[in-house]
Image: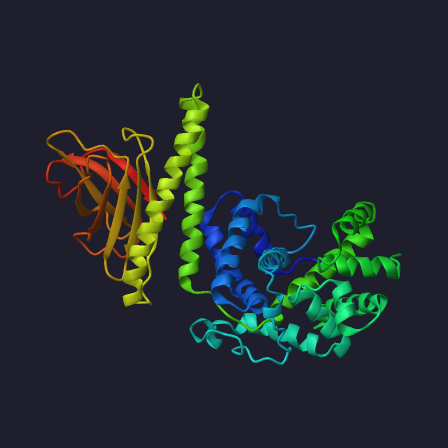
Length: 193
Length: 238
């Protein structure tokens, strides 16, 4: 049975419905809420502020044009936009053949590690978001290291399970099992925290 | 009951790691299995949450302006195209071509204007600029347009007008700021277009306008008036 949406998820759904009706003020509010995490993801994967900004612009234009087709049965608005962002970033990485530029930072990275000093969020403004991020980092850090490493390679580096198996020198079945177990644990622990 | 193999596939699917063929096969399985759909949704949520593990950054404020500018332009195109089709349905291809060229010119205008403003911003990076897109209302030509870039901190702005023919003798166009704190629109001066119906002018309202909801252009007596009298030709908000 699917989880009951949280208050934030319901608010996001209301906003995306308004965006689907071409409401620019709702779009502006949604931008304010999501641009930080989505930009952070794009930066982590691309490692280049200009490219990350271009990718983010594409993502938000896509959100604007596709909001009407968003399906709450498939995913929350946040996850939908994260996966859209990841997909746009991967398009860019593939088009430019620049996987080698990606550096997967460990989950112990400090927030400012890869940041342009002018764009790092002020702590006072982002306590709530950082709480959520801290929860994810905590859960991720406490996964078995081989599961964490495999999930990070799959999510942030756009490596297929075949490529991950080759890089880690592990059988394909082992890699699939690590991804499954890691993601299931992540889901379970995020739900219980 | 979901098998371990299905769970493997669900995890790979949630992370976008399946190939096109595997994706299609798994989606067909999903359609028939509600429990599996629930699992995929939850795994997607877990995958989405991974984004929060990235070091926290914010994009520069200028990116939001770029994005909002793009969607404002797109909205204008969507609003205008059906009108044009309805009025000139017997020449659809000519209208489509004209609109394409027109939109291209508008895009160029906007880029030029934004470049000009980028220079201003460079001098004061904290300054905020708001864009207003003005659409025509009767009796203005249907393809008349204007874009206002307004800097509340400086109480000044730039307006770019296109496709607005020069007014008849004895008349002038006048720009107005519609401010929430003022009963009447605030004059921002007379604007004069060239023979091609184009103008790009810096302006400053005659009174302080801190809560501008919209800008409008009206047709007034030559030299302008202190309080709006004539018909509104172009009006628009953010």
